Image 1 (tube, rainbow, N blue to C red):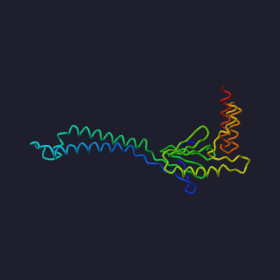
Image 2 (image 1 turned 135 degrees about the horizontal axis):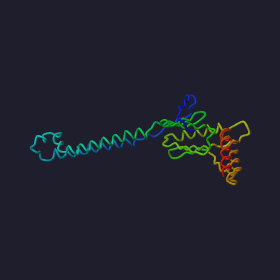
Image 3 (image 1 turned 90 degrees about the vertical axis):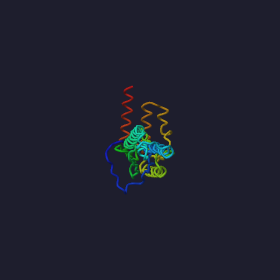
Image 4 (image 1 turned 30 degrees about the vertical axis):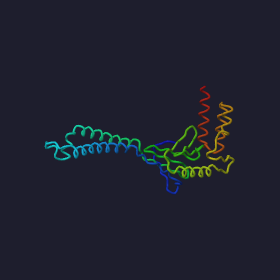
Length: 228
């Protein structure tokens, strides 16, 4: 489900878009650098305007007076530049552009070059948190954090999954976020190859996994059993 290929989705297929909270913490380093310099120059200014003037030529103006502290100022400028550089690098490395799109066929998440494409037929469970949505697929979970409109995205997913799971065949209709405990009963009661196969059969009959996924899981289970 993960890949780095660009997935183009037509506007007519988009049902909902995730809105992520912006991350500002790297810019706190820039603010810290600016405040450090501002406070230090403010202290020099207080001293300049309140302390008796020296007779040297360097004491005639504020900027001339501050040259007495040139060593400290140079150190502070280096520290401030380092903080700004760290903030810029952090923004590049950790604050990457994100997008989450619920279309008519899948959920697609992109962060930087990383793309996660989750077809609806592979989704077993969805859950909503304080600021996130968790999507469960066979053998994996994807948690999408800092979503401002998480309820809108969750409701769209729930509605679409309810619609897409309905089938005209003999498959069982199941709520997309329903607990799979009952379906896992054969596996829990009989944790053998037969139990695993029965579990995957129920997932397949319920439309939660595709024919290709079913064949893959069965093959993996048989291989693991033969290697015991």
